[in-house]
Amino acid sequence: MINKRLLIKNLLAHNDESSFYDKKRKIDLGSKEGKAKFLKHICALSNSNPKNNSFIVIGVEDEINEIRGVDFFDDSKIQNLINAYLTNPPLVIYENVAFPHLPSDKVVGLVTIRATEEITSLRKNIWKYWGGSIFMRDGSISMPKDFDIVIKDVNSEIVKAIENKAKNNIEHTLDGVIDFINHRHKDLDSHYHVFKEQFVVCWAGNVKKVKDQTYYSRVDIELINEQVRLFYSTLDEVSISYSEGNFKITEYVHLGLNNHYKYYPLEEVIISFQENGSYQIDSQLIFDPPQFNKKTLYHIYNANNALVEKLKKGIPLKPSEEKDLQSLPATYLICYLNDFTEAKDALFEAKPFLKKAGDSVYNSYKETVRILRKMKYS
Image 1 (spheres, rainbow, N blue to C red):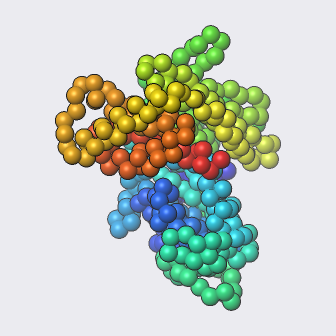
Image 2 (image 1 turned 180 degrees about the vertical axis):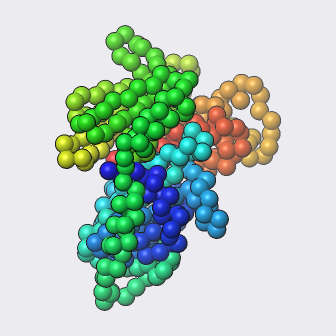
Image 3 (image 1 turned 120 degrees about the vertical axis):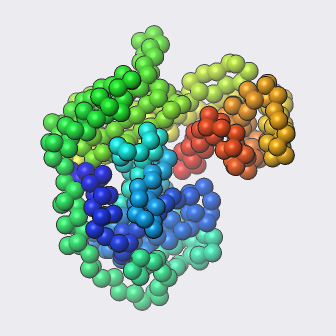
């Protein structure tokens, strides 16, 4: 098994951006331009490396090669985006890799691209790139190429050597468990479990028991062998269960109006561990959106718009409005789930003003966008 933290360190320490490796400060999959650029790099790396893995490391300051980190990104549906826009799409995996020196809410994103040995091209137009376009890596740049390109394998030995240097060992695994339980989460209820005598999963959070069910909030779940964070949230609550070969995470969202809130199951993720040292992650959206009175929602939607207008104009908010601002992202979401289609655009347009309103409001915004992303790609 490959320790993804070591893999990233090896890529950063010994390799400039090349035909099998790229690094980014961040990516933006919320805009057409951001999606287009991401797809271009996936296409180019896949075509340039037909028989080995390619990588994009996200959360690195390019010029000084410093690890800064990015927000946890749990888009398990990213392959759906790849399949929708690319012909002969490669297998793309996005993993959140924990680094001890980063804040608890930051990780380094590692995108692994496994080519199909077929030429990958854009399936349809996106942003300024035309459907049918083919990209290749020219050094550190993803460039458009002609249709008569010849795919060559020139990186297999280099990539193999880098991955071999990142292989895990018992010392790395034990250090990871001790660091997770005794240092990073010493103030939380922490556990670990070994699957198939090979895989170690650690999880931590605040525990709340409702009847016979145990829920966790402030949740952090990590596959220690690979230093990959499987789940992280400061707001949502999850339930955890496991058997001999499976680890299941059920995520809930807390939604409601006028102080009447309820937990709704959002997504179920099952990690299946195999005897041969491999594992598979399957996720299923199980969200049944709550329905509310339309007249009430019209009032809330208009009140949200009025709050955003005040933020835009720099008008101070009343104490009652400050309280409403805390729930504004979630109530915009509820409106959107109840056929107020314009509520999603209103939420996105409010982003810069919610960011200035404080960490708690902006964290609520990011959690809301995460739910929307899950629904879209499902």
